[in-house]
Length: 349
Ligand SMILES: Nc1ncnc2c1ncn2[C@@H]1O[C@H](COP(=O)(O)OP(=O)(O)OP(=O)(O)O)[C@@H](O)[C@H]1O
Image (cartoon, helix red, strand yellow):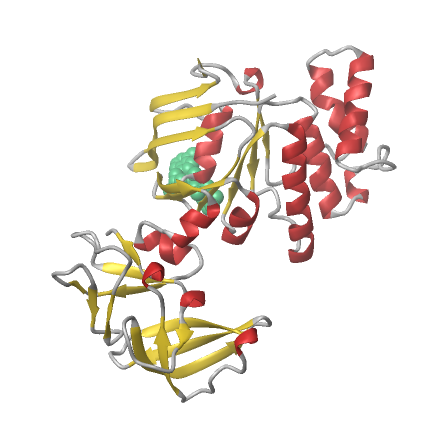
């Protein structure tokens, strides 16, 4: 039921646009990978190439070592769940789930057994005879998942699987999706433009920009150590501070009115660093990695307040002030900000 998917140098052009530009990606057996990127970054094209709906201009796609070139979609041990769910409206839940197995010509007893198993796994008991219109959005989503998983694909591709759900249901269904993925043992590749969802659900996140995978790694690593300005601002809206690298490897930043020092000397080519809003704290004393500014705006967010602090050099920093640290400083207050060396992340151009 598991798969090792390997893409090497996959390129797909549409006229002058390289929707995919030399993508190399490996997905381990049973892994949950989230493909994250802005609109037009190539996420859907990548899924379509893996599923076989789109042929790459160059590069290879392999599953468990076998080249998928020329293998039509329905012959691949891969299933795709579309954003629209694409359920048949005139068929019952059970018939929708059984459809693919019937087309494969499996014996009736096996179909009945597998459908029952999928219904139990997706907790759809009691809804077997209902039509899709009589289901909630979350239930429809579970039917679509059941229909995809009942064929026991080694790899399941999901295009914005939670996109049609409201915020509450999204969170709950996200947890369910994760549990189902573990139980089924299939590798999941999920496309989303929702960063919180990608970070929460996936074992690994691959960030796409203009047809390339610009960084891939465990969610915490990509979040804490973004490698480029694009990833730093795309994921979690980090502060990006520009400046001039000093001889000893710090960043002299006139905008913030300070010199930022990281754990190790910054690489020669680094002309900017990222600093997460939640890593910045208020400091009583001046010292290394501190700077002074004025609170311009403060927005209450439940467990924290987001402050916009105008630094003496003119830059504005986003600062997350946790409720447990007491009342946030009011608008107009002069504050000294501080952060640790470890929180200064060098960015490559
Ligand atoms: N059939 C096509 N013909 C021409 N251009 C296409 C085609 N399919 C995709 N493209 C272009 O390729 C690029 C990548 O598109 P793709 O749909 O893969 O992006 P995406 O990351 O999935 O975006 P979104 O999040 O908006 O769905 C875009 O510039 C798009 O306009």
